[in-house]
Image 1 (cartoon, helix red, strand yellow):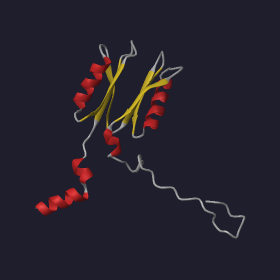
Image 2 (image 1 turned 180 degrees about the vertical axis):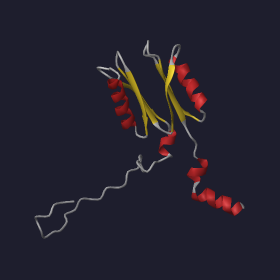
Image 3 (image 1 turned 90 degrees about the vertical axis):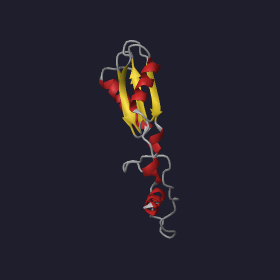
Image 4 (image 1 turned 30 degrees about the vertical axis):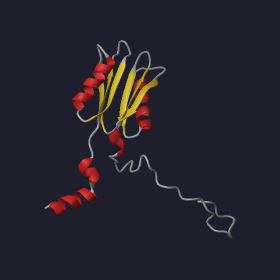
Length: 149
């Protein structure tokens, strides 16, 4: 039994030891105050931290786990989004802000938990370490009509 357990730990340490990291965004619509939390093992702790950072009258607008989140706002509207990549979260938050009547929306804050780099989905298999690029070389030396690939 020990041999099986040791072999599982050696073959898949990421599965056994990886933790879920929670985060939250809190926002006050009247004052524009915002607060966030990152990298909490418990979702309730993440929510409480975001509310404490934001202050009186704030509500939780986003909860996320092993992901990025972004908050965008203008004078009349706000938007938020979560995604695996920070750029996608920013873009989607801006779209939501404009969708709900914002005229000059800007990103207020974008944050990512630690767990985003541990959990890779098939859509984004290597977020931090992209595969090495192949050098561009001519297809053949003799034929000038062939282009580089």
